[in-house]
Image 1 (cartoon, one colour):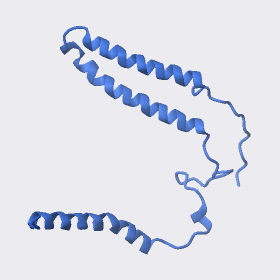
Image 2 (cartoon, helix red, strand yellow):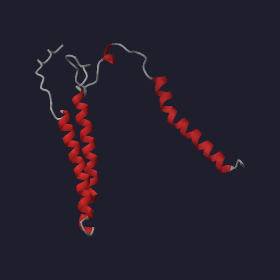
Image 3 (tube, rainbow, N blue to C red):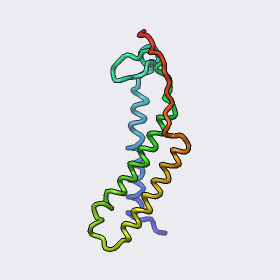
Image 4 (spheres, rainbow, N blue to C red):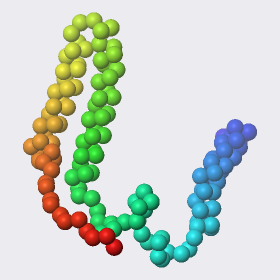
Length: 131
């Protein structure tokens, strides 16, 4: 294999990309404040001082709802082009393909319902006092 200018250009650009990607990390490490006490330990909540148990984690149900939202949001992204091009396609094949797709979306909804994902447990908690 002959080493030519193209190989040198690839190596130079890879090195430049690595330096370009690593430089913000190195600069942030060098100039970041080292103080880790006091106000630095409090969580940031849109400029409002947190009260109560601010470090508590959200329930897992929030994550499940977020994942389901993303999954069905992507499904809608598949349905929009089909709806736009539906009148341009001849025959019943587009209807069959769309029905096939929506059948599996319905199966997913039924599966989530059977697993109890859509059941939201109600917990009544008293609000924490301001500190």
